[in-house]
Image 1 (cartoon, rainbow, N blue to C red):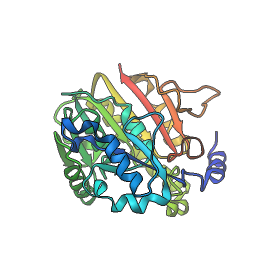
Image 2 (cartoon, rainbow, N blue to C red; image 1 turned 45 degrees about the horizontal axis):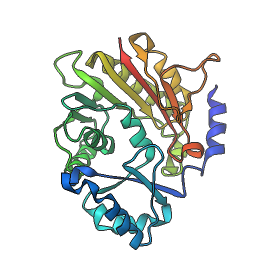
Image 3 (cartoon, helix red, strand yellow; image 1 turned 90 degrees about the vertical axis):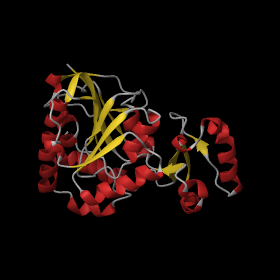
Image 4 (tube, rainbow, N blue to C red; image 1 turned 180 degrees about the vertical axis):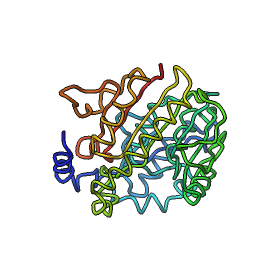
Length: 294
């Protein structure tokens, strides 16, 4: 599938990115164990504010409502306290693939603004050990504030280039999440300014960075370690064609059935890869791959 064909698909999808749906999650890191049953109370409080909420089909801690209710949620005390966290469903879906467990050493290579880091912490109930890296000092500062607000523990923040992460050893991490910088072609409804940056030069710039990050992830991941690679991009160059370069280091892992198939390359789909589409999943457009290192 050539770049012009993908651009045509993007144009067709433009404006359909879940623009009537707002997703958020319940952050149980801020609830005592005896408060875990307070979900009904939370939903009742939202209902009393006129916010009709429904539980997501795939994730018990994820909910959705109409986007017109966003202002009311932002003003709600539960949101201000960090007990409700607004983010795209794709962020939860991608991070959920890591299946983080207690005592695992996990690296979020390009972490800012920290939403996926906070999901790793929540899924492991603050029992995983997380290295939180980002190139931007300013964005990492925002991440630090967010993690503190959401009661995320067991994290070490590093301000460095993910291509040369300052880790002494190879085969170091149990799991790596690489949500790589990309063209953002799957996010036009929330980042419309990116439409004007879509050109061959911008694409090439991101491809070079992604390839270098992937190579470093291979070195840092231990044998039998899990890599989840994602980009909020609809271009095959940033997804399928990128992971083709590293397949000899990995075995594919199964993705959820509700993910869409990835693009076919040479009339074949790449095992362990899938896609989320705005018009199908009411998320941002994402490429996702899950592999286990040989």
